[in-house]
Amino acid sequence: MILGRPLNEDMQLRPIKYQWAYDLYNQAVANTWFPHEISLGEDLEDFKKMSEDERHAVSFLMSFFNPAELIVNRSLALGVYPYLKAPETHLYLAKQMWEEANHSMAFEYVLETFPLDREVIFKRHRETPSIKAKEDYITKFTQRMTENLDIETLEGKKDFVRNLIAYNIVMEGVWFYSGFMVALSFRQKQQLKNFASMIDWVVRDESLHLKFGINLILTILEENPDLSTPEFAAEIKNMVIEAVEMEVAYNNDMFPRGILGLNADYVNQYVRYIADRRLEELGFEPHYNDANPAQWMATETDTLQLVNFFETQNTNYEVNNRAHK
Ligand SMILES: [Fe+2]
Ligand SMILES: [Fe+2]
Image (cartoon, rainbow, N blue to C red; front, side):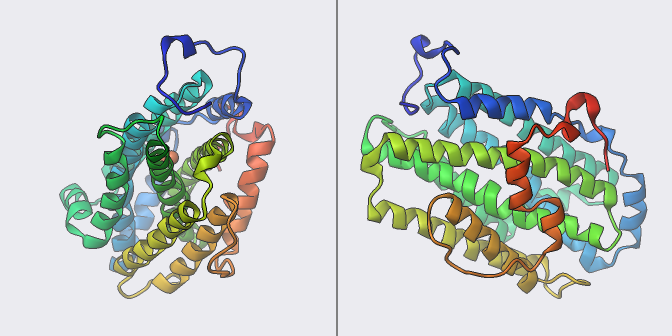
């Protein structure tokens, strides 16, 4: 059983029980990157020429993303790591936690480079209701993991899965992809190209985080058939639908007027499209049936490409053979 309080008896890597976790660890190590290897000089020039609304979108993204990386780490440290027995999952989570720290430092680097008001950006994530609602949603599920949770009980296992759905499927799998799409859309307009390369690296990491989370959920469901009830399935699906509604409110604040080629409706259609992909990965039918409005994402960071990325050796991204676009 993958779920349970890890004991010293469990701290022996071999024989490996969950090969997918071990493989993901090795893939994550091969995908190691460092933000300061990407020069943002040209992007600073682009930023200076951008409209007020475009700058608002970039700074609004920073307000959500910078703390969000650390919120994911708190969910992993308090809500995931202490309840998994297999050492190969601990290896992977240690690497993922470094990656979230690295993402946080990457966004710090952007904040240091662009003329953005750090005070405004940091305050905004607690003072803007649509961002605060997203953070509080995640925190609510992580909090439960720290309060007298017994992982051997059915309710304890359900709380584990709820927290996993919240930080992994919702935060990393839907909300982050919504933000990635906005960030990468500037490259479509020949702007912020190096910032986009940085986001490409983040997406590669996040695609592995998602793969780990989905494998973990499916393993837990397989090992604990008592979790597979229609009521619990409906609850999980509703968590994703509620998260889409929260993202719609957030995107409306990001684009009060819309900017060239990008507005809240367009991004929200992508959010519904990506939420359907996540539902399918969990074994549900799609809920929204929207087409992908951002076909250009398919060439760079689409889910299909991410699946290929996972299955191949992805030699393009090896540490010793890296080439930034
Ligand atoms: Fe991250
Ligand atoms: Fe992540």
